Every structure is written in structure tokens, then in C-alpha cells.
Image (cartoon, rainbow, N blue to C red; front, side, top):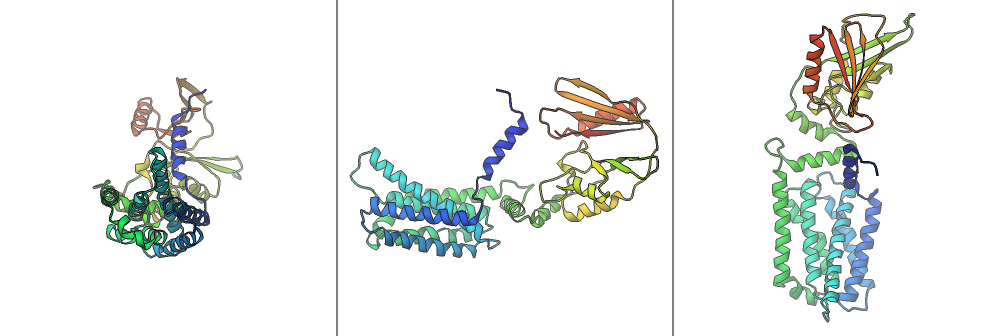
Amino acid sequence: MSEQDDVSKIQKRYSLTLLNPSSHYISLVISIAVAGVMAAFVSVTYLNSGDVIFPVLSVVGVLVGTQFLDILFSRHKEYSKSLHVSLFGNGLFFVSTLIGFGAMMLFAKDNLDLFYVTIGMFVFASFRIGIFTTILGASLKKAWGVAFIQPVAMYLVLIPPTMWIDSLTNPMALLFGAAFLGLATGWSYFTDRAGRPAVDSTHELIQAYVTSASKNDPTEMEQIIERKAKPSTVSTTQIKFQSNDKQVMFSMVLPDIHPGPFHPVGGSNIPYLIYKNMDSTAMVMHSISNHDLNLPSQEEVNNYLTSISDSEVLRNGVGCTEPVTVQINNARAGGLLFDKTALLFLSLSPHGMEDLTMDIRTQIEQFAKNRNFEQVMIVDTHN
């Protein structure tokens, strides 16, 4: 089996973060199904009840009602995220009841203890504290206020009132519940501060990222990035080709601006925007640069595109040398010379590569200067 390159491995690992329902309608249907199955399962196994329909309808009714209530506590009032949270939370609730049933079978117990159902409620609430603080933009106090609404409401309509006191005052259940809630609270508190001092609020950054990705709205993310951005002077170099009759014109453009940070934020689409800005007659290359040279906002992108038209011609010519290619191990360099301007392409193809370091660029430019080249244009092919 051939060895996978590092970029492919990263892409496959990143794909694991995208395991989400494709539609909030799917989340709604699955969450109702999970809640209904859990209610029926608890009624038959834990409660030894022959009545399944009423508990199922009651739990599903409470589930749907509290899903709408959750919207009031989320930052952007998004019903879809409320449904996703409900789906995964109910999944944890159901898993806890299954663990209790498995423990009974494993240890040959005569009956099931509501301890596992109570723990499931606490796990559900703990999960909601974490999600509401990190993804939905609620403060820790507000997250505590909303975290118990759905789990407790479902618990109270599922478990008969005569069992409420015994099940909810079980010392072991309260101990484990307090542990889960404490972990969720501590996790939310410390993760929000994990990026300091560079990032004021990690949760704010996560929420801005989710908004940019799910709603295609980069505004919040760009505001965060602009607070940390610094002005810099960069150059954009191009080689312009034209036919003898000057009817056909084409440019090879090498901007020092780096595409990024990610779609649709800032200059993530800068190569295409340069291409369109130059009347679709340009081939935009990737220079040796890094994400320190990302444009932070759409406003700065527009400023940069406007500045491209303010250019000057350094030299003219009518010919170039034949291309030369040199390869050492996986690294390959191809280049040609336009008068005293060298155009150099660096590649690791077919192996993956990330941004070449600025140190490489500095060494190449010094090498070219020592050999009396006026300029060297270095293309990081970024394959």
C-alpha cells in the first residue's frame, strides 16, 4: 500500500469534524424518534408499564415544545442549532438508559434502578451547558438556566410523580450528577480563557467561525481578526504578455498577499478576485508567504484590489530563456529568465506541501542578488 502524504491525512481527520445532520429537519425527525424510543424503552424496562403510548406522546410533546424555547437563549435565535443540540443530547440520555439495562444483564440484577435514567438527565443537562456556552453564545449563567429545561421536563413526564422524590434524591445520582455538571461548568469556564492573551474569548471565536461557515456571514469573524491585524506594506509583481498587434494581453500575477484565512472570511478568495479585477486575463500564482499576510476583511480586500491598478512598468523585453528544471529528492525547481528577472517555480509534486518559509525566500533572493539578477519571482506551487 502506498504511503499517504501528510496533507491527505489532515484532510481525512478534518472530515471527522463534519459529522452533522445535513438538515435541521433530519435532526428534528431523529430527535423525535430517539426520544420516542427512549420513552417506550424506559416504560417497558424500568417502569414495567404496559402503557407505552402516553409516555411516548408526552415526552415527544415536551421535546418539541422545549426545542422552540431553546431558541430564546441562543445568540442568533437559530431553530436549526436548537434541533441539533436536542438530537445529540437526547442521544446521550438514551445511551445512559441503555447502559443501565446492560448493567442489569451483566450483573444479573432482578430489576432496573432509575439511577441510570436520572444520570442520563444530568448528562443531558451537562452537555447542554457546554454547547450553549461554546456554540450558541450564551453566558455561563444563562446556560445553567436553560440547560435543565428540556432534560428535566422530559424526565418529569416520563417518570410517574410517585417516583420523583426517591429518584431525584438518590445520593449517588446527585453525586454523579454534580460531578458531570461541575465538569461541564469547569470545561466551559476554562476553554473560554484558553486562548488568552492572544484571543480574548475562545467561545466568541468558535461562534464567529460557526456563523461564517453555516450562514456564509464573515462579519463577526472579520471583526475579531481586525482587532488583532496590523498594517503592512506588500508588493504585487506581474509579468504582462501581449501579442505583436497588442490585441491579446495576458498577465502572470504574483501577489505577496496570502489567500485566507478561510472561506468566506477576508481575502480567502483573493486569487479569483484579482483575476476578475484584471478582466479575467490573469493567472494568479502563490508567492512564498504565510497566513500572517491574510487580508482580515472585505474592506481591506477592496482597498488592495484598488491599489493593484496603481502600478509601474520596471522593464520591457521580447524574449526569455528555455525552462530549466532541477530535482533533488522530492524537491523540484523549475525556472526561466526574462532578461535579468528570474521566474522560479518550487514544487514537491506529487507529494503534498504547505507554505514555504520566508527564510527560503530570503535565501533565494540573496542568491539571485549575488548573481546580478535584478529580480526573482518565486512561485510556491502549493501542490
